[in-house]
Length: 483
Ligand SMILES: Nc1nc2c(ncn2[C@@H]2O[C@H](COP(=O)(O)OP(=O)(O)OP(=O)(O)O)[C@@H](O)[C@H]2O)c(=O)[nH]1
Ligand SMILES: [Mg+2]
Image 1 (cartoon, rainbow, N blue to C red):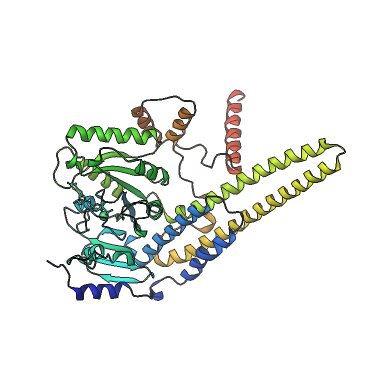
Image 2: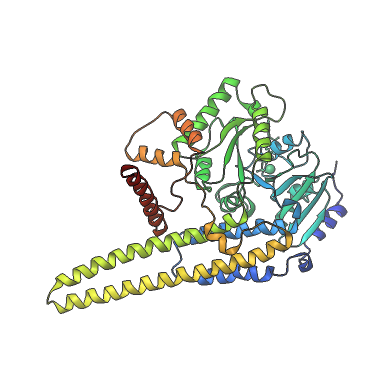
């Protein structure tokens, strides 16, 4: 039975390929902001960019894409974005449908199905909208979401041609989504370029940026796999450490027995601990009723998340690129200065060998030049950071997305370092082992311990903060000793 007629499909296609975005619906300063992101930032860092700049910039652009989603679809403002991640067919869309009370709102199938990231929010009426590749808004019916995945060819013998590839994001509001302050984000499963399931949309790098731009991640692993795959481990390792992750073993009904399911969950915990991947918990889920599943625990986890304070915001996410570049410049400049000091010391010992002295002096000049260039780029980046956050704030203010003042950006606390991970890496370095349950327990305990120093280790900011802390501590001790 065809769900849509060819005429319906053509009508939907027409809407989807509308090439002009409605500038009137967008804040006035958006063009300047986009110029800063797309032109000025890469230009400023053309020379002397940190080696990981491409990856940082890729993520940065994705965070802008998310910000743009918020501009075009305002109900997202103030919501915590909880993204579903995992390999293709790992049960992400089915899991989300289950949270919607078993509705078949999102398309599911054994082949790669989700072709466009879809936000699912609570709303009083059910409705859907989308943003196309040109950044234009597209009005849609909820039923169209299915056509986006299967597109043309669903009902005849030809291959399916998904239409979702022509869209950037889909937004669905439904009363069936019970969490008023959460926006779920269903994403296409990731796959590697050499796999049969690969397409631009399933590209692992894109999936990574998409997940890194979210506030929370629910990672799906199918129970029939029996264990977490190496690809999943590597993928999870590459995600931002400061985004909380809940692991869900989906398709629990496919586990040979309840005992096997529990064993698999323990195995997943053990593997994640071994690789230093932080996670809130490993819970199990199935499409239908399944006695051994952690359905209640999942619901109470989400309820807590729904009621809790929002953890991340755009300012923090955008700031990551600037902070990481600054850390790189601080460290490299310090290192170069150390090398230069060593070279200058060597020069004083050369004595009367003019050729050697000349060579070393030329080398020292080169180093000085490099330090100057790095310092200039660092300063340029600082100016650009202020300009970027000023433009971003002007745009955000117009639509009431809360952002701190640009001058306060530097004061924004960096996300906490994972104390348990630090302990783990020390244990590893010294070839010591400790029970993984104990480590997990420690991770929970340490979650609420206030940070003494919250700066990148080794940088000049770190040094300053460490010095201030020591002075304070020593002064306090001194006072106690000599009242
Ligand atoms: N038995 C069983 N099958 C399930 C369950 N959840 C999902 N499936 C099946 O697994 C297949 C993939 O499910 P999807 O929900 O489409 O998976 P997905 O992760 O959204 O896949 P992509 O969007 O392609 O990345 C479908 O055929 C589902 O019917 C479950 O709990 N039990
Ligand atoms: Mg899906």
